[in-house]
Length: 106
Image (tube, rainbow, N blue to C red; front, top):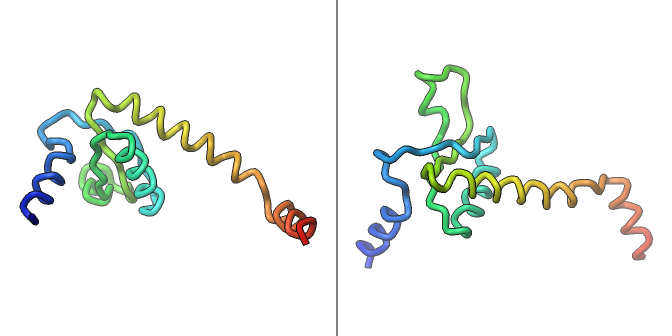
């Protein structure tokens, strides 16, 4: 059974010899994991990599990057943008608004 799991994992990751496009980068690993989950749930094969691996080529660059196949790049970017827009609405409430909302419920 472990062999099947490994085979499934290998099939889901893009072939490193394919042309891969960076669609997301973040200094925060947790943010990159959320975006990876979003792409996974949409059925877009992706690879999460540490940008620190690229230090020799791009000094000073750190964090995490997400790569997808070239043909999936546009759809992946659209999903990420839609997700950010929908999350922006929940971030509009500041602490004072949240406190006031709690007081009105009491």
